[in-house]
Amino acid sequence: MSTLFGKIIRREIPSDIVYEDDLCLAFRDINPQAPTHVLLIPKKEIAGLSDAGAEDQALLGHMMLAAAKVARQIGGGGAFRVVVNNGAEAGQSVFHLHLHVLAGRPFRWPPG
Ligand code: DGP
Image (cartoon, rainbow, N blue to C red; front, side, top):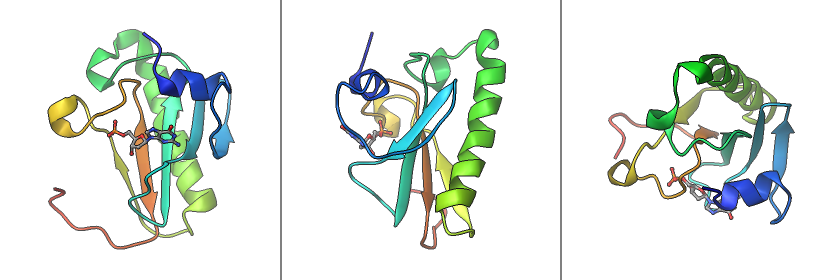
């Protein structure tokens, strides 16, 4: 089922896109939790990480490398955090798989 991130991929709603390749798209989060807060999504519509299958192995690896590339390019060159919320109880609100790429401030552990 298509979500609003599907609409962002198809340019049906605007977003501040910072990276794109044939498999994924990255754009700034509308509600940033850090000076740099980018969402990296696969163009393939996968609802969440637990819905990915063995056929998505290369895609998921590609996304991790793309997240690091985005963090290097716009994250200021310092530390960064990558987060996947999987399921409503873990904080997922948009059911199209996405990596949160956060940078530009110190991060605490454990996360809330
Ligand atoms: P999550 O809660 O992990 O499912 O993260 C969803 C994120 O999506 C949340 O941080 C806010 C962001 N978001 C929701 N709607 C939009 C939108 O229309 N545009 C952009 N750029 N981000 C959005």
